[in-house]
Image (cartoon, rainbow, N blue to C red; front, side):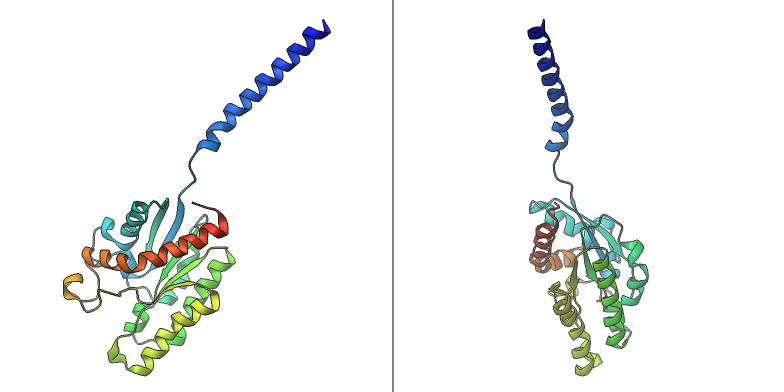
Length: 223
């Protein structure tokens, strides 16, 4: 009887182990969740004048997925936003669970001739708030229009370099690189990219975004 009892206990244990394996198996086999990025910016991010699927965040998501990155890119662009406007809304524009933010703000500050010190303070505030939440930031910079003069241009453009250096951020120096002044790649206003212009932006910025993704994965193991 004791031998039969021992056999029964072993059988029950084996059955329980198998049952637990069935429960755990699918969870282990599920693929990693997508890396969640948020593009926080102005009309250049929002996709002014373009269908939603042609806007920078959607186009970036497709380009990254085509390069085997398991990512989602949310569009948190607001047309007309200044860096200060971005600071006011960063807490609700960037939801919990975000793995990284591509920060593209400052163009409207420059167009309005705002003191670069104001832009610096706002961008730094955004970076600090996201850092406090454990969310890494990539900075997409902007160049100043030359009609604002060399002194303003030097002060404005230094904002992005200095912040990237201070906070050890991936920096893409000029978001409109390759399309600024190119009539065929901009809408009639000469300021916002066409769908083809967005694709040209992607050609330049993709290596920096991939570097950013690499940093996030090293830090968190996500994606």
